[in-house]
Length: 454
Image 1: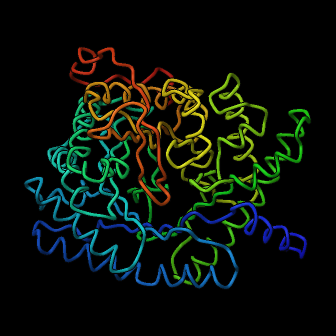
Image 2: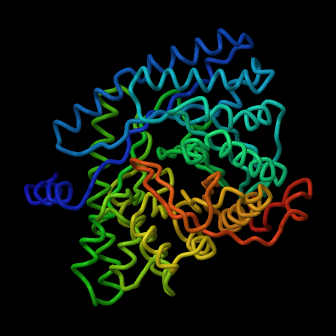
Image 3: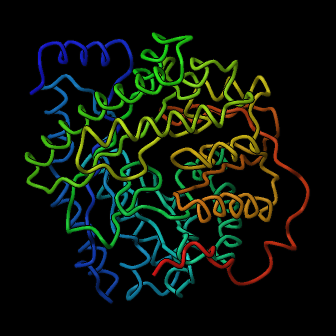
């Protein structure tokens, strides 16, 4: 039972420390929508999404009002569209039509984003998957709410370098087609290794084929709560620091569990997982970088940053798994640049580089996230950065991702404003030495030896 003290404590977290439920995401399987008739396919997709998700936003608002817990986003994820569109889609424009259908359905049920314009190509690419991937730039430039992801590697299969190379080109094309809005389309495109089937966070959410017909996944977030707790044990030893973070993560996850249970019951939809990630926002006091500084670093990026982030990530997981029987998704600490004011400050102070961020991704939830780079960055350089990050995920048996934004027409040191939860970011320099001969080799990088566990 939750006692009065815990209620008061939670209220203070919400009012003063930016505690929120970052998202309720409804995962919807579209497997039963498949048709070889494009008109029928799009009709089936629209009808199923609207039928399943019509009450998602009203129920979310109802829970917010009743419990006083902010729920920032209500979202939908669907089965990877490369699987759904295969029989009917013979051109890239056929896939773009599906993207527009997803966008229309998302608007009609008033959600913030819909994810799943995706392909899973960690070992090879089918013709339908290649068509979808090549359609991504046009799809993201023609829609507002659609998010896209491509999984190009896994610990079991290795890294499909043909897909990596293609994604370098796709990211540049997406940047060009959305250059009037500072290449914002790239903020809705993620490249993954070891992508989970139940991630509720955008832009990488999709409803995996291992999932049921419809499910509710919830993502909680409380960087401000953790920072406040850590500030109260300043100067204490590591045992005290770890226990403090762990206990705080437990309390934050309990809030997510409550919301997930209520949403599941009211929507008559099975509960999937609680993702207990620390997801920052541009708001002051809602920063993962600030937690690292509260631990004793002058800036995120200073020596000791990777160790501090490893400690934070592990204790968040340890605390969270005691609060919910079904923890999943990504669950840990996100380290985006544009969405975290503390990270932006570290970049401006030249304490944080892409190379240091890459090292940090070895121990965090995801990877190189929401990083603005010069618009003239070569597509092979982008592919090389993706390959490096995928290798970290493959070898370490963890999820890694890349969300780079080459801002067309802007260069190193300039600032780009994305707005809302996407924030703003200084454009970071990239290593200008060429890797084209490496990424232009065909085939795939084989899986590491420790993947062979049968």
